[in-house]
Amino acid sequence: MAMVQEMTLLLIMVSGLLGNGLIIRVICGDVLMQTMGNKFAFIMAVSDLGLCVFFMPFSLISLFRYQWMFGQNMCHVTAFCGEFFTKVSTATLSVVVLEKHSNIVQRKLKKFSRNGVLMTFFVVCITALIFSVPYPPREAVYDDCLGNCIMITSSGASLESILTFVLLEGLLFKVVSVSLLLVSLLKVFKKIHMRRCMTHPRQKQNLINVDQLRMMAEDYTACTTLIVVASHVLLCLPYITIQLISIRPNIVIPHSWRIIAFWLLLFNTSLRPLIYGLRNRRSRNLMLQYFKRAKRNVITQNCFMKLGRRRKAYVVPVTAQQQTEQTNVEELMQIVDVMDIAASNTPLFTRRRIMTVPTINTTTEQTFLDLNFVPDESQIELQSVPNDRYEMMSLARRIESKDDDLCIQDIETQDSASD
Image (cartoon, rainbow, N blue to C red):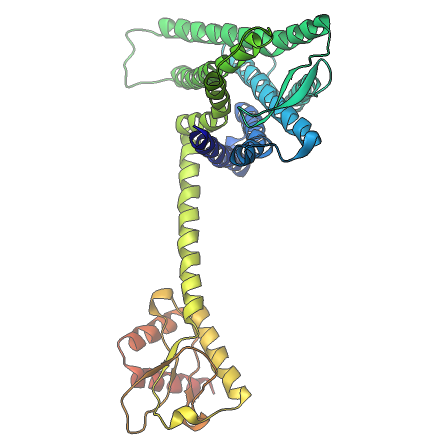
């Protein structure tokens, strides 16, 4: 069971990091994606990413080591981060639903501006901060079942303070949030249904006016918001229920129930970017472009790494007698410079040797894996590399076809013309 829990938590953490990182990259990188609703989605992605960075790794390490290794102060910090980012996501989701409600149901109301988004984010963070700090009647305690520190009611606190805190927290982040979500979504879908009924039945289906396009877009957005809200409520409900039941000291909850509820709560960080990416066409296309670009960069990097490992191996036809001869440092540096120029100007699939040594009474070729040996300078003909890409490609193709003499003649012709 322990290994299953560790692998599940690792999968949730990695998928949350990748998904929310892509959402943040898409919204920040594209101006057309920076709408009002996407700005709130950006805030939710940042809070989910913070949960994946500042909370889940400590759980993973503790589950592997079967103990808490980071001290009491770090226990308070991780418990605070878990509570804070979860509350920010819940409150921001309620604001998203209110924003959709104002856009669809009450269009005459003043829309959210940039300052309004910043003020809303500030209020949400302050409210979540107040109810997440580990002060009485709450305290941070390590839970070996979940592998991390969580907030629980302090045993030394009075019953009145515990009830007051629980009621205020439940009223703001559970009752009010869920009520706003349900009421706003019901009004949104009711308005959409009324607009559909008001559509003229005799209108041709292949003719769509601006109002119908707006109605279709609002319907699609409302469905996406409903999916996100329903998944959030269903995944958070088991953990909230267990927290409410655990207030009473006489009730014992099985460990398996708590672990599953904890997994479902953390799975929100991976599911939200997946829903957003699948339902938003532009976001989906941008994500595919990023994946293709990353794949292309990896392939190119691998090719350059292979080329770097093979640059010390080059082919020089020499005889056994010439292997014992040495050259000076200047000729050696010239050979290295010529090889560097060819490596930077020649395509990957046509890179070959760029110097030719005439053989004496032999037709064999020997491969040298280092630059410690260089043939005699009287036997080496250093060739200049053309700067034009087309000329370099034609030269590489001729070298590919083992037509070295013709290539050397072309290079000598170019050198004489340039002189």
